[in-house]
Length: 258
Image (cartoon, rainbow, N blue to C red; front, side, top):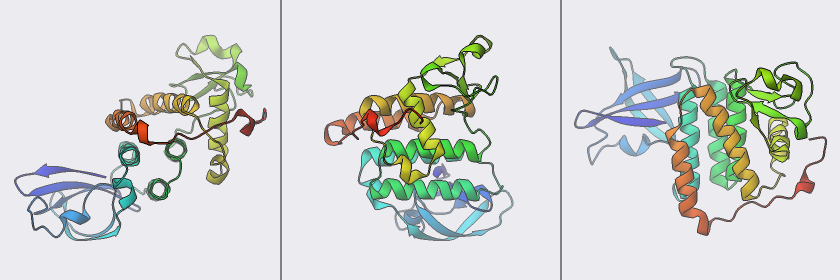
């Protein structure tokens, strides 16, 4: 997921593993020009590694790339998005604990980005499923105060409470914010899944921006600090805007029941 320098020639790499969760390990000599390990231990690469147990940190003795996702590295917006997903997974993962769900979710999301799926759909789906997997599933249908169903047109939402608030409970949630009804309907559709069904929703830039603002606010509230790669995503999107075709959206794609 990331690495940092250790001395003149080594790196500490942070790996996401299914069974052991997040693991830091020393990759010796990876900063040397002729290192055999370096190309296999870059961020956003699925890799098989052999670790030797060390006194403080494990040591990478072998590494073999399984999937390098070259399409991600050829597209700035997709690369920055993938980095955001990896940082979010890093932030929400416990060291040395089972992480099968998060590992499979991140891998599936990188595959989706690499094959050309809509960036916004992949990102919002990842955020929603990651929050659910880690015990922070947002409530987009029923009021977090009283439990009653909330009509999308009458809802506000609480980032700290993690869901929608009905008009009667609004006064008890001082942080409650307005939310566009169409944005809320799309969030409900993404959460209800499956992914292929949500993929039929077409987004324009205004709706995609509304979804992003809500989910980034929620993620910040849960993680308790801003994600640095989220700003990178925004900067990359601005740079690539002239050459990137936005998804289209028609309100007829959603029914009142969504």
